[in-house]
Image: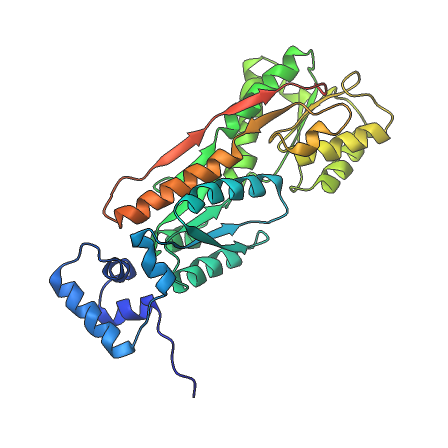
Length: 332
């Protein structure tokens, strides 16, 4: 029979303390002598051996940080990862990467497995909050920082998604476009879905335009799906402007507009959000809003390292919102 491998949670259960207390013990943090003795005895009974790399994190000699992403084939994800690497490299940390492909179950599995793998902390990117995920984050034995979303009571670095889309809507209206389609994503995604849609609705209402002259459509984060959506809407074209929740959606819509023999921006103005590199290579180049993804990664990693260094003593939850810059090109 294979010998049982004990985890930090097993030690915590045997000692009658929290996993966070065991983590503090391992990192020579603040604990009562009573708890120290209970943990010491639980470790003796189980033969638990912590990951040496994780144990060295408090000394500045390096270690591992878990990073959970919804997908790896994404310009925004790669930029955020670059920002995370910028900050972690300075402290000699390595990253353990997990890609969920949008699966809620995989998010929970990665959160648990990374804790069992003794990472010092976890950065969770672009999630839709559920009760089970919220519980998993709050009960984590290591600090967790979220990027791209603003969830109450949790450490976050996020973008002013609503403000960016609101400003793009104002600009397309000022260009004389009074019949507009907004192609968004599911509002279950608070940042890219709900907040960006709310920005459009707010600017439209502010302009005093008829509600029926703003059409809402929903697709996934996929250019091909956006192209199909736009092609269907062009069969009965009653709009002169298109706003898109992401640059990828905008690029798909542009393809359909070109194939329909229409000119951008003469016949239809269009804008995206995200300032992806691909938007500079289409004809005409895409008007968009630049979101500071690399800075987001740097800020999230720095926030996580502060939590690790603080060893769980701080009761203050930091939430940082990053602003945007409108990038005017020829598509609007």
